[in-house]
Image 1 (cartoon, helix red, strand yellow):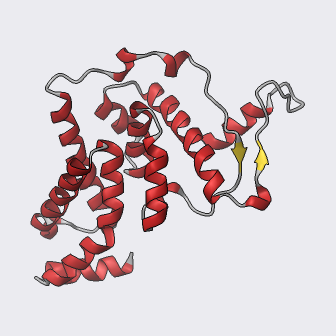
Image 2 (image 1 turned 180 degrees about the horizontal axis):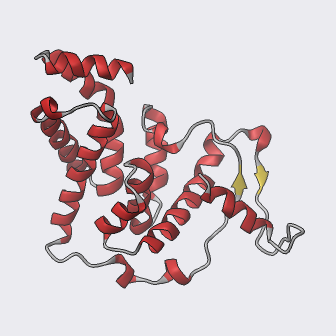
Length: 224
């Protein structure tokens, strides 16, 4: 964002008001992100506060090779993950050990399909949409919610997400797909273009080439 760049330049020059504007621009989005990871208001608020304090302390080291939004998002993600690790204790249990359903179970297909008016990672920018997305994510199992938050919201790589959660990269991909499908099913009803909304085909319906229509749908989601 050009405005962010201007504010960062001013903040580096000692303009605390400019930094306050950066906080105001990104605070709500970062709270949505940390809340999706931590699921506790107090912890999410602590993570956001920690992120901005660290950003202020290290602003002089920020070389702007990436946008300020990307930089502060990564700081907030790391702050949230530190809180999550403390909560789980020194010995982190791999979520793979809890259940193998993600590797062996059937991936559910969405009930409705429609183009979205916006991408989910952008919805945190607006108060009401952020609330709806947060509520939708609250309905996800924790292991799916965490993968979605780290991969799609915080934009960690598949490898980084797997490392943080102590699971395989393959399982990250499956859990991410499950989370995306579940969220799309919920949010399509809210944000989808009603004129283009259609009932999703069921798994037994054939697309004509030996591939079920549901499989075609799933492949389309994997490209997003």
